[in-house]
Image 1 (cartoon, rainbow, N blue to C red):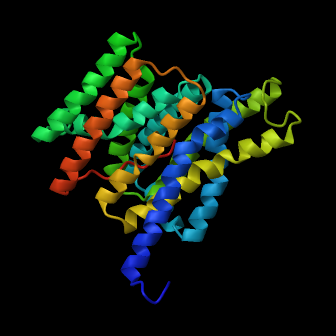
Image 2 (image 1 turned 180 degrees about the vertical axis):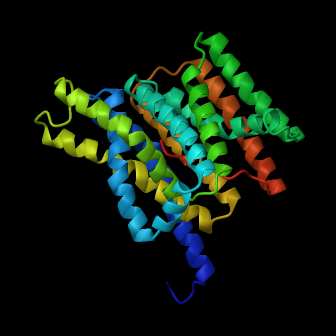
Length: 306
């Protein structure tokens, strides 16, 4: 730390660096998926889950968070909620991987643009919250964007809606469950790992697995599925403790913006209706963010794990 920096300024600087790293990794994640596009979505999922376990264990050891893991395992309610969270995030991961492998990165990015507004909708329909005028306008614009794409291009963005809905469900569960980011994720992948391991063993015995088929480079890439899943979450956790929620709220748009750019780079179809849809949603997010900043109630971004 330089002499001119106070401890608080140093903490904010570290928070900004780790926050940008987290959202940058999430934003370029389609590049990783494209690099293993010879592998089926289910096998990629299995590797994400399995290799997150040992890598997550290393992080927990380094951060001395094992007592929190043991405490959560001893609480039946927390364990049940984490099981629900595991189902939600596994479905989110699978749909996301399918979207990227299927050349629908733009649709995936739309889902994460919609996500903050989906939280608002959840607050209204689940928690009975009342919307402010600016929030109503933002939700209306986003809805108009989805309808434009549906009726104009003739394509209902089902992938976008599912990604946003599943991640909203995951975020809500984790928000109401008393466990930290890394301990919670570790328990989630541990709960999913028996299924992933059984599937991978079956795939290898059937001779249909890409893993251990003789391509060392591909094997290494698949093992890296663990670190690329866990590292951004750890960076996010570090940033969340050091930054204002309004700052985190703006940083969260780095991810879908990079994904959007990658979708264009990959040559995905981008029509006038896509432009109108994204334009309306970007406008909605600008209004939403400005209103939240003014009211100082910007919701905490959910724990991203795609």
